[in-house]
Image (cartoon, rainbow, N blue to C red):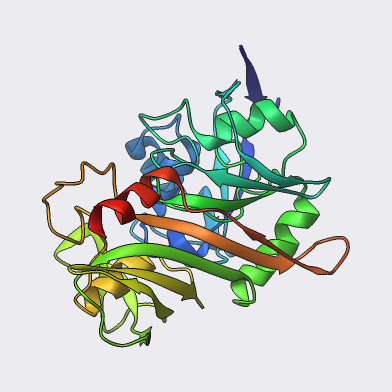
Length: 315
C-alpha cells in the first residue's frame, strides 16, 4: 500500500527553494548538489538557472563549479512551475524510539537513505513518509524530509530523523559542534597491533577519482578514534568514535592505517569470499541532547545478523 506526496511548486512565476548543506556533502559542485536535491531537473537546466543568477549561496551569486561547504545556505529560484512526487511506501522500518520531535531508526544494510536520480523508491525516506505522513522537518526539501545526517547505503545502524524544523536545527547545531556521540563497529583486514589509535588526517575528494574520498593536504579536518574490540587470525573487530563526520571518514581513515574494511570494494580489496553486500560497518551508538527536554539521551543497536555471521566465519 502506498500513496503519493505531491509538492506543488508555487502559483507565482518563480518558486523559491532553500537548502542547508550537510557536513558530509561538502566539496560537491553547486550544480551537482542541486541536481541531486531537486531530482526532477537536468544538470544542464540547473546550470542555466545558475548562469542566469537565480541561485545564491549565502546571499551571493556563485558559479556552477563552486564547491559547497557545510552550513551553506543555498536559495534557488525556479522559473517554471513543476510538480515533484516522492512516493510514500509502506516499507518495514525498525523504529528504536519515537516522540513528537525525533525518530530513531535502525537502518538495514543495502538501504539508501533518500531518493536520488535513478533511485526514487524503496529508500528510507519513502518509508518514513508513510510512517510520519506530514510530521517531518521540511528544512532539506522534498527529497530529504527529516534527514539530519546520513549513513551510506551499505552501512547499517542508528540514524536520527527530525520531525519538525525546530528539532532539525537543534540537532544540526550539535552535529556542527561535534557534540553528538557517534560510535561504529566494523571488521577490518589484518591484525591491528595497538589497542587504541587516533587518526587526525584531513579528508577531501580524491584528485584522481572524484567519486572517492582521500587523505588530502587541503582537505577538511577529520578525527577518528579507533579501539580494538577483538583480534582474529587475519582480521580485527574494531570500534570507531567520530569527532567529525566527513564522507566515508571511517573507511578512509582505516585505509590510512593499512586496515581497510572487510567488504569495502571501493577502498579495500575487490575479493568477496564472504559474499558481502558491502563494508562490514555498523552505526552502533548515537547520543545527543533532546530538542525539548534538553536532556542527554543515548541509543544502542545490536550488531546485525550479517555482521555476526562474519565474526562466526573468521573466528
